[in-house]
Length: 298
Image (cartoon, rainbow, N blue to C red; front, side):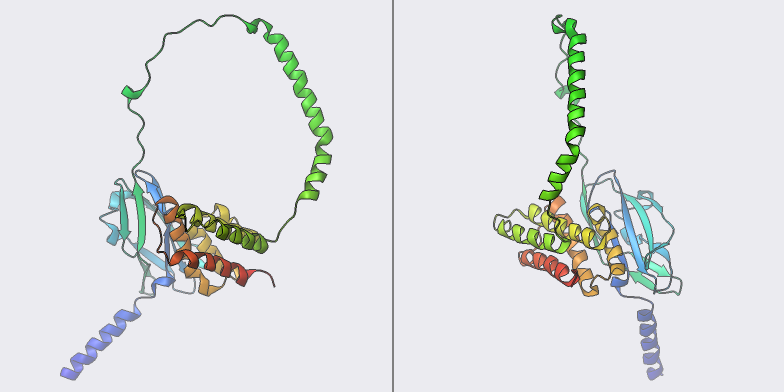
């Protein structure tokens, strides 16, 4: 009987472990790391299509920060590239730094998927100045008549000057275009990004502790390179959309998690003054350089 009990416990453990997948199979991210109170924010959930189709989204672990009335809606699951994707619209009314537990998603085959823990910074919405701070209303004074008697002639001269300027612009447009084209040097995206990294390193922003500009510039260089190299609007995309796009673009798989972590830390450094550890600063620049070197054309 004792052996039978031990065997049953082992079977239960095996069944429990087989019903869950790794957290890296579920990508969960907000469209911004910082949001104002009363402003809706979107949570994007992405599951690889190689796994069973997702069904239920469980946000019960967030009930303290986002009760039922703060969940504005769920989108249906749809396909985007190689992923199943859904969005949840949320709203927060209290300023706080929220450390959120993993999101759980139930799949059709009965397995459960969990994301990594998330962080969201909710800041108070600025209030307008109080009425008592407004300047007193001044008395109305009649404007004396001066140059307005000549308004017709002034308007006529301005119109003639404008017509002359338009004619000059059109007459010299072709010549300016040819001159500008001869002075413009189009650099490949990888060469341009590497030059900008070299220039950023020469500014010594880490020594001057200007971390917001440092991580803002690094993030811009990476997004600009991805946009130029892979031809998608990375400069206008949020981090979650970039991370969904990269696996389908032959981006090195072993760099995906590091890039996702870098984009999250960059947003926190730019918008919330949440500075990464000292050892992460040189690593971030080396990571961007490695992304360029490993994806640039041979």
